[in-house]
Image (tube, rainbow, N blue to C red; front, side, top):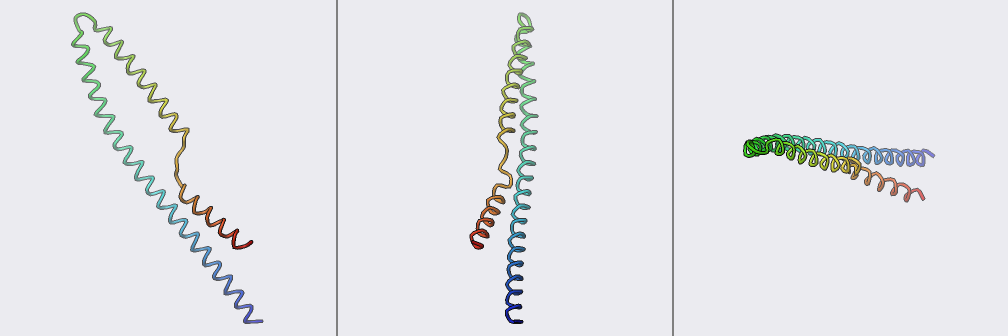
Length: 127
């Protein structure tokens, strides 16, 4: 009886060790995905801020140039048309951002796929 009991206990210990190893691997994968996503978002934010600064400065200078160019005859029409262009562009960008926000992200996709494989392997082994 003691041989069978130690064999059963040994099997339970190996199973527990395997489950802990699987869980540890999945948690490491999850941590890696979180780190990669954080770095990606930080880079995107930095580049977006630089782009916004450069584009904003360029647009302000272009606006000043156009208004000065039409200063004598049509300065109000130039200001009105430039305002309309920016309002339309802003609305278009807002719609794109809204569509991207509704699409969601693929964060944790690899972790969820691996956990699903583990679940299927455990079900297959128990049946």
